[in-house]
Image (cartoon, rainbow, N blue to C red; front, side):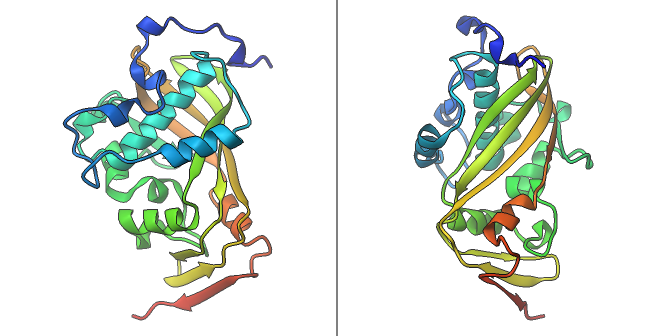
Amino acid sequence: MASADTQEPAETSALPDYVLDADAVLKDANIIWRYGKAPDYSRTRQMWVETKSQSHPAQSLPDLVEKLVKNWEIEASHKLDLADWRTIDGEANYTVSVNGGPPMSAQHMVNVGTYNALISPSEFYCPARASFDDSHKTFKSMMPTFAWEVLDVYSGPPKVAFKWRHWGEMKGDYVGVNDKGETVTIKAHGGRLEIQGVAAAEVNEKLQLQKVEIFFDPQALFRQMAPDGKTGVSKVKAEA
């Protein structure tokens, strides 16, 4: 099957900034940011530069998709007012689903956070038992930078299908609450953690997301944190 990587670069003047600059929405003015100011992605971007597996030509379809998704993640994690989101086709025309599950709204992701929206309950973690702040503390303390890249794009707008990679290093201990209400601790091993998946997205003429379907194994990350399922893992039942 031919890859969409072979497509010619698009005309820059006809494209929105959020597909040309991975940090475009960080420069938006008069935004209500979750923590009072625009977040700093410099360490994650540097890790991406140093350890990415792909180097897509500027303004090629994979490059445009990669930058769109990075700006979407910034908005989903840090912009509290949906009216400020520029990467989606309005709240009423946008949904995201995971592994064939029910569609979720943008407001749901604002409320619970990207980790809780995308990860399913397991013996290691339970999104229903963690707030937005809890989830970010759990994963960012364990893995301070979590880079993302597009590996391949299989079809272009208006229906974009692509394969992606998300990776980081386990530099801190993992501490989370699982589906039984137990506090789970996994000692840091300092090694690489990586997940891959595919996604299918419908976009409008402005390349804004309308319907996003994500498919991946959410437990793959935890299996790499504790390769044998036991070493370095402790579970303590939370007090009632």
